[in-house]
Image 1 (cartoon, helix red, strand yellow):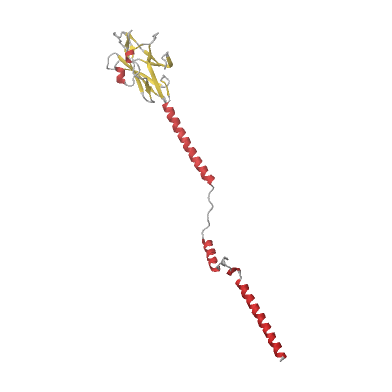
Image 2: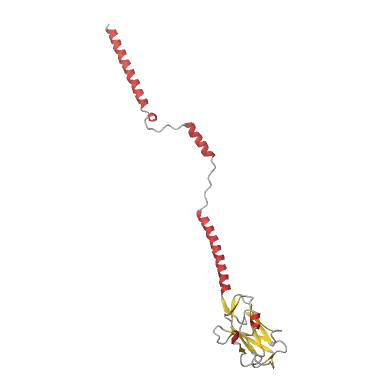
Length: 234
């Protein structure tokens, strides 16, 4: 009987120990991090492998060119545009610049005309590369005359005649003036007046007169005109 009781107590002790070990194991399993509330789920090995494969299949991104290169190109382009603009402005300024017409920047001719009778026509054509102003009237000298030919003040235009390159100004010479021409003339010097009308500027244009030209003591010349018709009125 004593032995039976001893065996029962031993069995009970062993069963209690096994139960305790089982509870402890269950409690440990319940506290694993993967099962804790709010814990991050373990990564799915299949999804991770797919993401890696997709990433590896993407083409490599080429590095961007430095912004400085684009800025340098834009600066060079803008610099070229500025130079072109400056060149254009310089050309415009040159064409708008004005100077005085002289024998050095014009070609001067003298010709006979059929109407009106006893008249010659003086033409000055701008051969320069900018505008020139033909002030007042041409200052004429026939042969060895000691004074300039009289100017017809009635022919004064409303404005100074300005010649663009290639344009011409005109002045008529009334050979008889108030009388009949009776003095033979062979040469003609043409000077240009300055802006202040205080004498001539530049060198003279020395011309040969049409054959048979006769002048008088009252020969006169008109102011410079912008058209041939206006000049021959005088």
